[in-house]
Amino acid sequence: MKTTALIRKTIIVLGFSTFASTCFGTTIALASGAGETKNNSGSATIDICKNPKWADAMAGTSWVSNAQSGNPNAPGFVSPVNGTSVTFTDTFDIAGTATLGDLLVMADDTTSVLLNGITLYNYAPANGNTYAVCSDSPISCTSPTAINLLPDLHSGVNTLSFTVEQINGSSFGLDYSGIVAYTPAATATPEPATLAMFGLPLIAFGLLRKKLKKS
Image 1 (cartoon, rainbow, N blue to C red):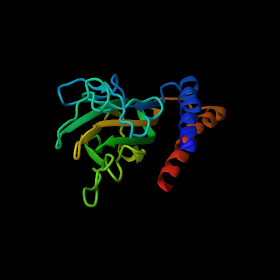
Image 2 (cartoon, helix red, strand yellow):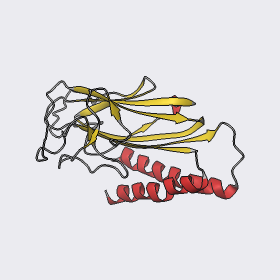
Image 3 (cartoon, rainbow, N blue to C red):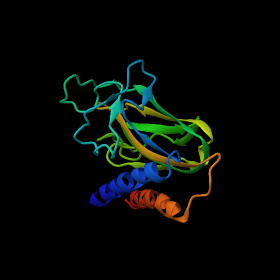
Image 4 (cartoon, rainbow, N blue to C red):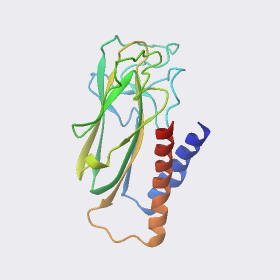
C-alpha cells in the first residue's frame, strides 16, 4: 500500500504539475468529484463520506454518489435498495490525437465502465460472489481496477460512463482517477527536454498498473 500511495503521489507531483508547466493543453486529468461527475438519477452528484471498509479515495478524487450513501454513521446516510442502478458520467474533449489513456476505478457494490458507448469493463460476476464488502472481485471498493482507455478514445468529445449497481446493500459509491494525453491537432515538435519531462508521469502510472496486475 505504501508503494502504491507513493506512485500516486509521484503522478500528481511530477506528472500533472509538469504537464501544466511544460505541455499545457496536452493532458486531461480525470477525477471523480461533485464538480466533474454527473449522474442520471435526477439528484446532483455529491462528495460522500466513505464507508470505513472502503479504500481511501485516490489522490485528487472523492468518493461520489447521488446521495450520502457511503458511511452508515454519517448524518443523512441513505442506503439504496438492492437493484438500484445509477449511471455516472464524465465528459471531456480531446483537441488532437490521443496518445495515452489510463483509468483506475473503485465502486460499491460494482460498476460497468463504458467509453463512448463501448463497454470496457463489465460488472463483477455474480457467480461465487458473496459481496461481503462490496464485490469480491473487480471492480470493487477495496482496491483500484486498472483500465486502458486508449483504443477507444477519439478526437473531440468523449464520454466515460459508470453504471454503479447496488446488489447486496448497504453502502453505494464510485471513485475513479485517470489521465489522458494527446498530441494537439497543430503543434510544433517538443524539445528533447520537454519529451523527457512528459515521460515521468507515464512511467509512474505504468508502474502503478503493473503493481495492481501483480496483486
